[in-house]
Image (tube, rainbow, N blue to C red; front, side):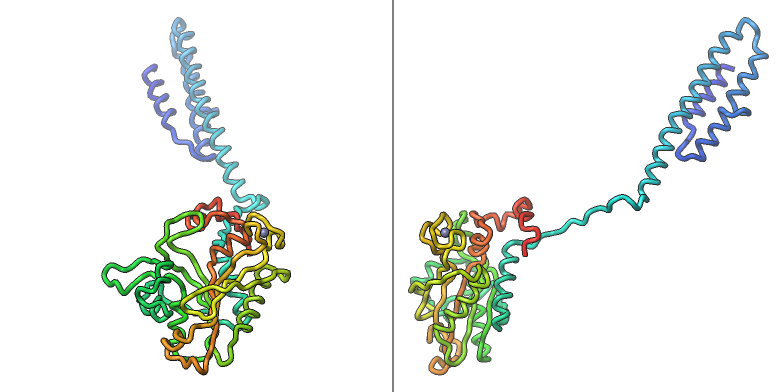
Length: 340
Ligand SMILES: [Zn+2]
C-alpha cells in the first residue's frame, strides 16, 4: 500500500498542467468525489485497527500533496490566461514608432539647395575620386603652384594622377567641358583635405559650390545672388560685406562676411567680437579657367562661389566641434529631431 502511494506521488508530480482544461481533468482524477484521494480514504476500513492512525496520517500527507499541486497550477494557469486577454485589449496605447532624424549636415545642405533651386540653379554631381586636371590644373592651379599647398589631399597609390577631390570645383569643370551654355548649377558634395583632425578641421567635409556662366554676367549679379541667399538662410536683417581675397580660379576674388546673426553685429564669442562672420569665398571665373574648358572668355563671363556646409551648420546650431558630425553619437544626432 505504501509503495503504491509513492508511485501515485510520482505520477502527480509529473502530471502536466498548462491550461484550464488540464487543470480541471487533474482535479476530477485526483481530488474529485470519485477521485483517487477519496478512493484511498475508502480503503481505511481494510486497515487493521492498530495501524489505522498511522495510515491515516500518511493519507493526509498525500492528500495535502495532491491539493498543493492543484493550487499552484491553478494560480499560474489563471494568471497566464489573464495575460492572454490583456494582450488583445484594444484600449491600451500602441507601441510608439521610433522616428529617425536627418543628419544636421543634410538638413542644412537641403536648405541651401532649396534656396538656389528657387533662383534657377540646377544640382550637378561629379566623382569624389578625381584626376589632377579636373581638381587642380584646369582651375588654374598648375603643378608647383603655391596655392596647392593649402589643399593637400590624398592620392591613390596605383596612379598618382588620381586623388580625392579637395573641393567640388571639379564638378564645375566637368559642367563647363560639356560645352552647353549658359550654365547655372550648384555642386554639393563631400571633399577631402590632408588635415590634422581637430575641433575646427577634418580630413573630410562638405561643400556647396555654385557656378553661373552666361553673356554679360557681372560682379553685381554675384553680389545680389549671394545677398538673396544669406537673407533666406539667416533672415532679412542680415548685412553682407565683401573683402578682397585671392583664389587662382577667380579674378577678382572675395570673401563674403555676414553680420553676426547671434549678436546682431554688437560683438560676441561666435563673431570673435568683430560683429561679422565669414561665410563663403567667391569671385568672377578666371578667363584662363574658361579657356581651359573651351569657353570663349571674350564672349562669356561668369561667377563662382563656394562654402563649407559644416561651418554654416555650426553657426546655425551653435555647434563648437566639427568632429561631432562624424562620430555617430546618437545623443548628439537626436538633438536635431524635428529640425527642418
Ligand atoms: Zn556676434
